[in-house]
Length: 329
Image (cartoon, rainbow, N blue to C red; front, side):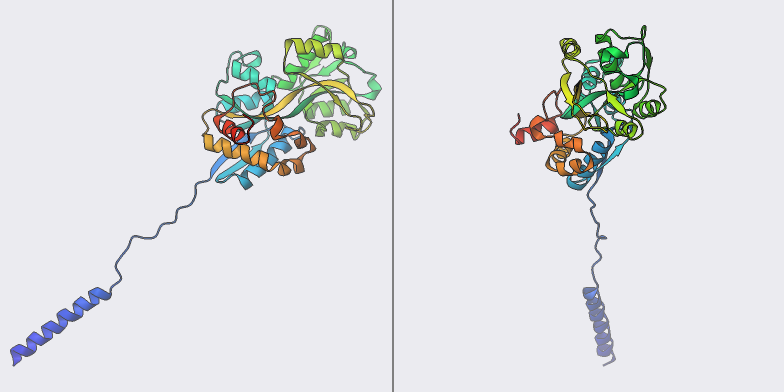
């Protein structure tokens, strides 16, 4: 009898042990959460007094809001020449610049003769970069010929504005041998005209430009004319230039249209960026142009139909893919 009791107890213990093992929750690996990777990109623009900065900021906003997995930030910079170098070196993924400067950079000429930027690729041309030669009405300067012998600011050292300004002045027979040339950026031009320490200054940007409006708020400004024959000389040597007029009323006190010349603003990137990334950036910019237009009126000139006009360098495959989808290529 005792043997049967011992056997019954042992059987019960074994049964309870097995039952306990059956109700234990099996251990599983800890759950993991996959977070979509966000790629951060930088857009280099220009000085805060120009047009690149607000346009670039609006591009960054549109990209961040509408391009999946991409966060864009716009930063100020020295504009075209600096931007071409930064994008070429991948210090920034995208950059705003003049189309003539992009051409010089890609082919290694002018200010890039010792530092060719052959990684530069086009995304889109944007709007006319109007060459505004700003003076004060009291100076009596009407056309570019009147700048001879004056104090003329031509843009920051090594900038695209400086290259344009010197080309235009040279076409009129003006250079450092007969005129006092100063190298000042947009903000410095604005301050110098307000202080009357220069007679005129070149500003290359979409209109209206904050730097010019800033002068007009405290001084009576005038825009210097670039006449037809100077435009023809420029066009013969530099195919980037187009002839435009600054409409009356663009700035306070400018009551008549003024003939001048222009290049084009464009957005460029680096050949090493992925096709998908550049595609999404291009798509976000053109399909949400309202964001850009809310930032600056010049963005009204940024259209899909004109995105390839004046493109001076090869397109990035990502931009090309978008344009093919839209039937532009």
